[in-house]
Amino acid sequence: MTGAQELKKLKKDLDDLASKILKKDSQIKKKDQIIEEKDLKIKQKDQIIEEKEQKIEDYYSQIQRLQADFDNYKKRSEKDQKEYIRYANENLILKIIETYEDLGRALQSGKSQDLQEGVEMIYKKLKTTLEGEGLHEICAEGEKFDPFKHEALMVEDHDDYENGTIIEELGKGYTLDSKVIKYSKVKVCKKR
Image (cartoon, rainbow, N blue to C red; front, side, top):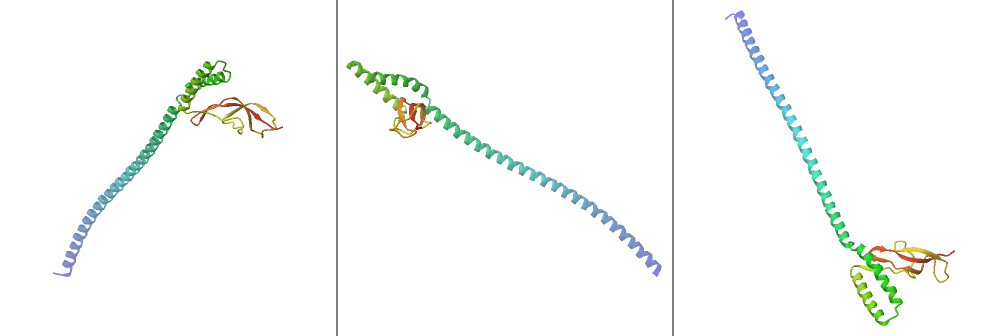
């Protein structure tokens, strides 16, 4: 083989190799493009997964808040129901108090011994019933004036009492358990 034939053969071999390289290069580019598309799809799927996980966290947080709200509502409802039951008799007791006080006044002016004994018996029974329901008289005379328990109807400058002390109870006051249902009507010492 001569140099020109060898050169031709080498050129042909180089052209074949270049063609094969271009073909392989084209195949590699196609595979790179497929890989890039797959990477893009994976990234999109990862993003979707992250969004779904965020939604799951949001829903879980919302469920926890709803559970806490429900627990608070349940506690509040139970407390309201207990208060309602505790003070359900308030209106009835307020009506009975008038009779109770009338009996007390009748006892103070009693003329007949039998009337006195009968009214005393009714008075004691009614008092026991009301106390059993949680009714208690508010102490007033000689106490310090408390606007949450007493209603000042009159004021007077008095030497025997300190300023703000109750001089006289004009009308009894009552609590039902710890709630004031009728304020004591009082005369208060006010120094000038």
